[in-house]
Image 1 (cartoon, rainbow over the protein chains, first blue to last red):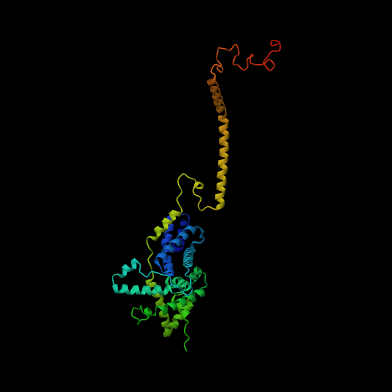
Image 2: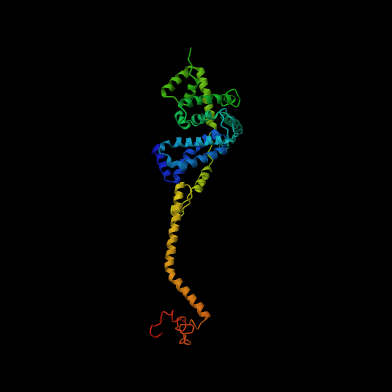
Length: 201
Length: 181
């Protein structure tokens, strides 16, 4: 059974109230949705709350979804709406980027993997902090397309569908985000900068 | 003079978001242009830095929280109760109003039928009981007078409101025209 057919069957079962199918949909999409929300908000605790709220809405409104092939972009749009509502509630939507307080600690699983090498752990923590800080410093509209199009590797067309902007606008904003982040992270990206990742090429 | 590729195009090329013709054209340019290649390398490094460190694991307890919340909001149907008897939360206002009006009508009709039915059945019983009470009260006051089986004084008509002696002949409806005159 191909992926589209499998999702279609799963959505049909979930719409009929099958709790197992609902959980399967959650398990398929929640990791990426959670990372998108975390990238936007920068705080694990807030990302958990918004992910929970997103999936509660998804489950309650699943009956209104007509085309199962649109499930992923539909979930992303709900998640995006919830993120923007969160911003509105916090009154932190500023195009110039006013970073809300986030947490830079690595997750338990990542920490466990890095524990074998304390030097690498320190470097990783420093880099992680710098990356999150730089991401939080981006204006929201740039942050959104960068998280979706670059970190999550989604097509610009899909990003356009989720964000409601033209593909051209997405392409331009991804470039602008990249340029801003490159400047912010020069120390880490420069091969002579000590703790840097170095050029991949 | 070499015409460089715009950085915006390089950014899209790094993300593999161009059509195959454009991808090929930029790749062939990058092979021969160190400056554009360096720019592409920096852009790819930014993406790689985020992709390699920013993947957070989904907290395993999150599904339990969602499931608990779902259970709380959509309580399972109670056995033996039809759905219209269940709490009306979530139903539209018109449905709740209609249900209330219907319930009042059913109660009113039921009450009327009950009262009518009870009246017809109980009326005779209540009337007999009240007659009995009245009889008992009078008998208690003057047992002999109101004793329908008494033997004394019956002939004189004493105490009998319908005896000939008690009634004036003018108003006695039972008098015989010949005998009483």
